[in-house]
Image (tube, rainbow, N blue to C red; front, side, top):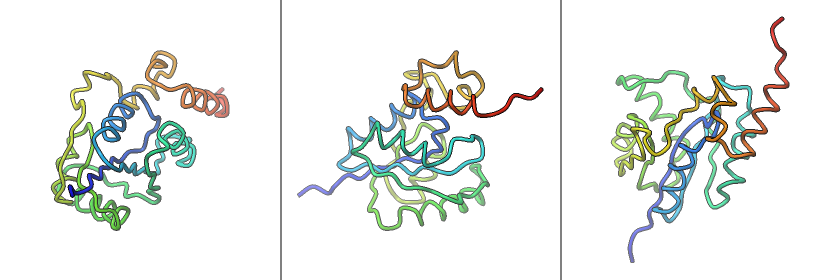
Length: 165
């Protein structure tokens, strides 16, 4: 019997957009099981639970892992990678993952550290030319990259935050 293929990805999904969805849908198609590790963050007021709800609603066949109190040190330098990998390893320690999915350069480091296959999806952002920072800067112009459930939650959040006078 062939070994089970278990993939995962990580992210803040702040907000979840079509680029993330391409990555997740690729993983779902290629793997027997797929996990999504969602990190807390202070770059958005949208709580981790709401961002996880988007993922659970759109991808009920996946397994969501909450990554609370995640390290704030990022980068590809040796110390940042060590800090991030120790944290991530703790989140997935009981899951026999075989593949890591990302659209970022850090995917190579994650796969190497965990001794699993690195699966890069649209790293040049050709199929889906968007990133979350761009969406946060201009929600309306980038509406086409968001599912309705995400867009309407973001609109609600914008309305809730008072304007500077």
